[in-house]
Image (cartoon, rainbow, N blue to C red):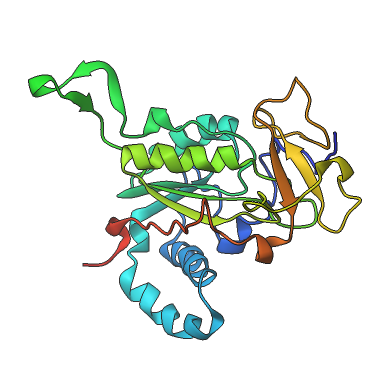
Length: 247
């Protein structure tokens, strides 16, 4: 097993989250100017440099940042602790920044899913309102970046799709899954031009060889953040809550 730092860490400065100005705000309001700076940097980071100057003015005119509250969630433990704190803050739009995503996260307790045992009129299943309105997800970047298991981010995407929640996939980070037909060799680990490891879905540990103790292991290749890109199963996910737009 190879270590990339502690995959369960939840504090301190985390690569990726600071890049877009999103922080764990918990139950404290952040001034509107700070909100705008975070969203503005986030939106601009996804566009070609030649378009950014024009967008700086457009973002401020179009985005009602006073309506947004975000909390950083890296894994289930962080979700269970921070989302209730987030919900205590009055806001028209609440979301989470799951970047870097370091473990599986189940959001069903806060999403618009069918109530167990509850049924609405004419036999339809009753549903509760969404408590979260936006989910941003991404992998870790930097020298000690840990690979993100593809199943973790696919699970968030699918949970959002089932509940009608906006989903934004920002990046894979330093690591990405191999493309269809792409050759790789996890048995060599770091001892090759493109390092490759198996990542365990249950706990995020990495290894060169598959073992019976691993849960749904997936190969991940270290190709740098720029080359890894932000395609998830062949497409970008750029959903943005309408409530944040003026007018």
